[in-house]
Length: 520
Image 1 (cartoon, rainbow, N blue to C red):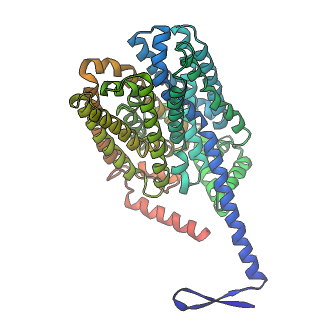
Image 2: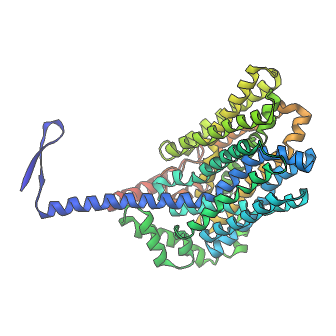
């Protein structure tokens, strides 16, 4: 039996309505349901894996306002203020360094759980601290926990996501950092009316709440299939891949690729010392990976984003805004902007690619930082200067959020081979945290020497250098599997035009893609 249908251009088409045709339609419907279920599952895993990032963002946001009241309550000096703000980034590198080893030993999932426990402990101590010394102890614990969390989340998401959507999913930690910053700003504004002895304690204590949901996540998210393969738990890895890949036909192919990569690890017995030996004495390909991964991490921070976020009340005060409530209200606008514009990166990162967004981001940040320096230096404290300062700060965080902010973590989780991924990502996170700590701990002192406006002229110059770095050192990784990305760096010659594939690699990738189309 057949039903006549109108096709394109008036062509008449016939569709079979016998049992075979019905079975085919049922199969298509079943496949669509499977694809939708797979996407939802990966989405849930990415969200839960990113919850630790909320803790980092909340701490960054809330400390910008809490420090005002900590000064009043504990009578700390300006140097102590810089140390308190910046020390979290410095000590978090300890967590990032240890996170690579721990995630290889106990798994990605349980490393995230350990990070949450450490942060909870630190946040509780900070909220009850009677003096500066105890406050610093809590800050130290929270920083180590954050170091674990920010290192492992992008690695886990990259390893569990299908290649076609890996960029979007791996951007989730940055989304949640921005959400945490916004929540921190809102917390500052909401509790600012309380007594200075109480309000900052509540502000810091609220940071415990997001980590409670991480306990729930342990019952939902699976272990990374690549880590399972490394531990020779092949059947478990296959089950995870069946849940996270839309095309069931590709599961065995993907599993074979992972086994081949992991087999190289096991065959050569890559122990911890061997991994660090390769990172410290790298081959040309690994050296290019390290330059790209660590370089983009450092540029993300040395362009001054944490100074902008931590000290936004100081910036707005220098622009002419008076009163703590007005200062904190202005920071809420910054938080909303930073959170909203991260959505642009999520939508476009797997469509237009990483590199175009990085160009827009770094060029836009350079422009906004220069204009902010000009405004603070020459526009005075009038209403026009205040509006321009708020606009420039919001513009800077907007360009950051739609480019280098999330893409930085995407790249560092993509470009390293399996045997080095955890430790190399930890090394990149160390570069980010050290850069962040140096900026946060020196901003007030430098701004006293060359003014706040002059400091942002320096940030603008550094941001201009980041544009050149993106052009020369960052390859395009959109749509490529983790194993294919490794090929980008393994040529004898450096990647041309910022990391384009050599002709032979293009041929190999085209053959791989043809096989994939034939299978699907």
